[in-house]
Length: 197
Figure: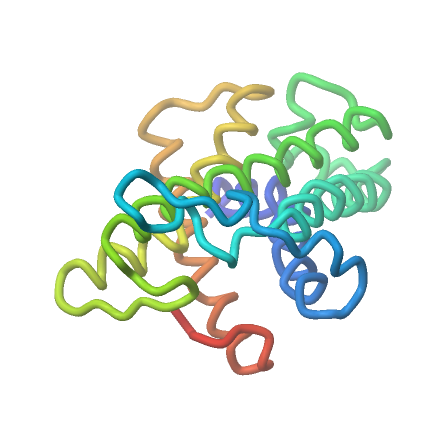
């Protein structure tokens, strides 16, 4: 139970950044950044590389919001021995503004970057962007992958600053994926997501 608390305390800023980024991508601000990261180009198979849903607005939004929420969480945690002890980012390094800015920006970058291979794979299989219009075992696989892809990146950032055993890395990803599923359900019911999965 203690390890579960440590996982959430460590990744809470990037979880909140992910929720905020959903809102950020919906509001009509800085829409000039709403350009696809693949520049609308196709892969040699004739299909888009990533699709229209992976935009510079979302990518930049994740980096900036990751940094902001990490700095804010650092300020909240400062002087709180319990929160500091539970945060893997503070095991080997001090809770400072620049350090939180760095880990937050890297977590946001990893979150956005690690979503791209999944989008690439889905375009190769002809899955409609933003939907899971497939059935059977492939649907189950992609529902999990949709929730776990960004977590793989975020936990990798944690490992850079506080190395974790390989088995623990995958448990962390599993817990993160389940958390992502719950948040997506909440976002769907709040009309911030078009599809639950």
